[in-house]
Image 1 (spheres, rainbow, N blue to C red):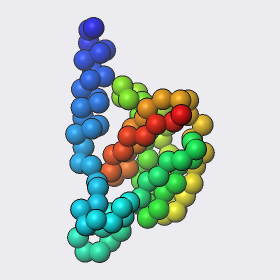
Image 2 (cartoon, rainbow, N blue to C red; image 1 turned 90 degrees about the vertical axis):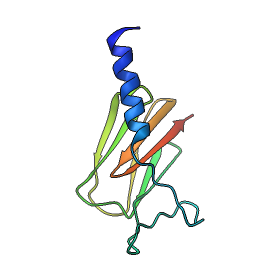
Image 3 (spheres, helix red, strand yellow; image 1 turned 90 degrees about the horizontal axis):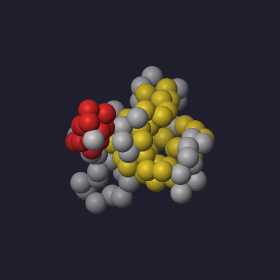
Image 4 (cartoon, one colour; image 1 turned 60 degrees about the horizontal axis):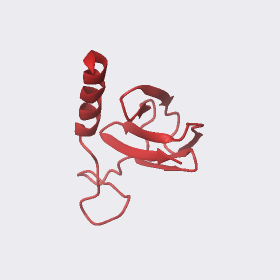
Length: 105
């Protein structure tokens, strides 16, 4: 197995260990931090990434399930859509404190 496999496992554990942001108040898909400020919303459908309430100037990063970075997108406006053009696989997306797993079928 070796060092490369160990590094991939460490990357996955790190990515999955980053604080997941899920709604605690029962609202599906709507995260609000204390103070009433809406957190970024990430959705992926049909190989299209949709961002709402995204922090301008920050980066959205997409990794393969083994931790390889495949895409990095700079956010230019709070509400954006991006065509991902990713191959069929399982991916991890990260933005600020939000980390999600998604599948391209």
